[in-house]
Length: 428
Image 1 (cartoon, rainbow, N blue to C red):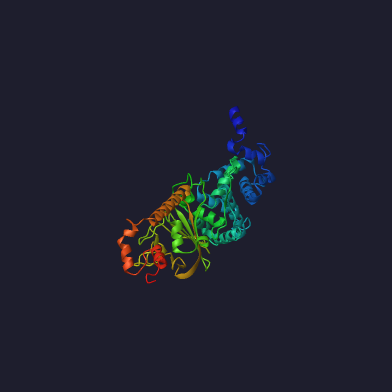
Image 2: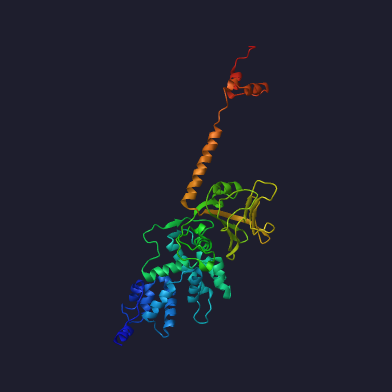
């Protein structure tokens, strides 16, 4: 009896990794409720909205006006155990539902996306020079998500399933004392680009599979609802920019061919459409389609969505006259998802033709792919120089071709012509 009474009086056992966090928000006492001000202050300023919503969730589970330490512990433990992208989406969208009518409005969604985007950049130690359009792009994405209504979770899972992965990793690190931020690591500053901005980079990183994001310890599941949250992404390498190198087939091929790694082609058109083509194999020219299962065409703007994905969906022909020339994307040859023709100057999408404004290609194969491409370019240059210096066989003075030139009335060399012109006239 005595032992039973003693065990009942003992407080529930806590997971030690949450002790520091709980002591900070509960004044260091076991039986003290969560201090609201200290709970919110525990979070950085930019995450104040998330802190208030988390506290509201914990308080609602306590069944009263305050949140107990035990309920706080159990709720935080439950949240940190969520490991799939689908679970993350449901959690954070649920936290940001308007408290009055239980609906998600554009402003709340924008606040959530802004935080998730910021933490993705910080946890990846990446900074962008060009951020002028970031907020407008986030607002447009928020409106798109809200407009999905009851299908918003499914829409995110299908089109950008990992947008809350970095946010969840950061939150887990915050409450367990393990920071998800790249402390002590030099931040890689990405120079201004005519197309790529931090929001596009975040969305594409959250959409494309591991060959493009250089993820480590990522789940092999093909289902968006079962992707692992343990990601460490690396940035991409600029290979080609029409704004810098010129918009032409020749320049395009010169800068991206021989790059043995996955690449992402960005395209903007004068009608407002923007596209991203993720190619998981080395680029090549020919009359047959190519690409593996990770190839993906994304309509980035005006509405972000995956247009098509799968193998054998890229055809790039600029030599054969038996089939149309250009870049053709899609597995249905009778109705391609996207056509880029007329020397990469025109685009056709959904039956409408528009002009291409800019194109960029980013390499996702890491330092190894870039190094191989650079070495290959050096070898090609040396070969060209060597062939340009090939000497004619034998002595030119004794070469039969020299005699043929003389018979034809041509001077075989400038030296002979000079001697003929400077020789004294025989008649004089």
